[in-house]
Image (cartoon, rainbow, N blue to C red; front, top):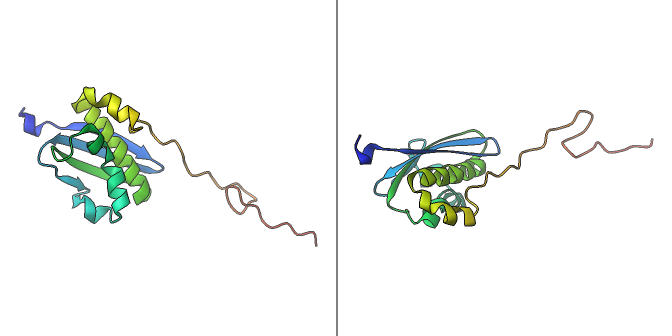
Length: 132
């Protein structure tokens, strides 16, 4: 197999979002669900968050990133893409581990939405108490 066709995979998750990330050496192309990243993630902060791992590992503009993201909202998907890219970079270049680890890019954010309890207005919110 040619080196240019070889992909490195990484799966990222955050909240209810899942991102399957493939990276390969290239010109810096970034596509999410067959759309440009600026088109898919309209907020600049989401884009910065999602692509942070490329900057930290020093491979920005040197790899092509192809992402399949689903579930959750765009904030969760941006976080999932971030973790997926970091894990894929780790497979491609294990020497990048200390830099990625120090930046906190290899840690899965465990925070999830708390479930709504029965007899209550929400997860923590209660119905208003009425004495009369």
